[in-house]
Length: 426
Image: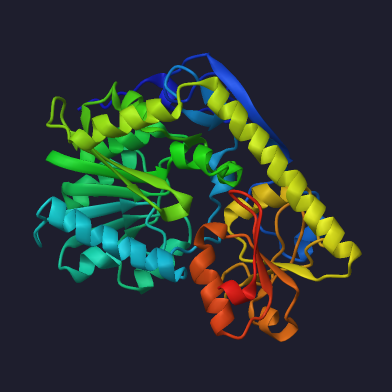
């Protein structure tokens, strides 16, 4: 079978002038975040002596399909080097969230032990472990060395980028899947067409391709400019996802919203055209229109809010510094790189970022601003005046955990709007 897809669904490295989803040239610049390094390219002490690569980071909006994208694509092999440092299993909230996904998918599609579930971009296998526990056949596909951690944990994993060729190898060895799932990867793909056709090739008749990403409506509503970084080539609306799947033999049959990453969308694309569509699809499309995702002024208001938040945050940092207050950062998610570099925050203003003891980022330095990443025990030892929550989308559990460990500092939540939370209020 010859698996074909539109040429524009292979995103070339470099400057992108048309919409990555629908190929329209009706693209508007919303926010220019300057030249930035790759958000997960943390540096070792040795690397600080070398020049650092930066790339343009601009947020663009397509008025035709409402897709938001960046207009410069860095080669995926550079972005996802084998040493890529992200692990999903060490974030407790995320591990629980992913276990819940497996339960809901098994129930929804009445999956049985003979059903194969494939996770593309499976990382350390956290999501698949939920399916495995329920007795299903599982397979992970992961390009980075994190695949080795998954294998050690008993999760069968193919270490490879996912494309049509890989799908054929998997099909031969493992057979057809009932469900293919991908979380927080579908916005990252340069090889969109390869990915969709690879999934199509591997699915049984009536099989389902489920993908979950940041959701444009939540990003705009929450002033979340920090979700814009080079890994995220696109930020989808439901309208843009439906447009994306139009050239393929899939029907978007269902949609769910969740609160991961500060708001996400999970779509279910069933193999074959003309499938029965849940009423939730129509309802969410209506909500997008009501919210104004199809209007330029919605994005102009968003940009203006982002610029105000930046000034407020910087004013606070500088005035606190003048009063000899100590301010440090907690967590170093990829998204904080966008914030630190766009705001212009270096070690003079925030001397370190504290991470949990299991993080692969300890002993490294943040991209661009070179803020050291240290063990978060240091927060408890030093008791700074303020702790900035870089993973602000998990603010509540982080504040509760740190306070329970004896932290007496007040907290700063930088987004969606700058906010100080007194320790006594946690």
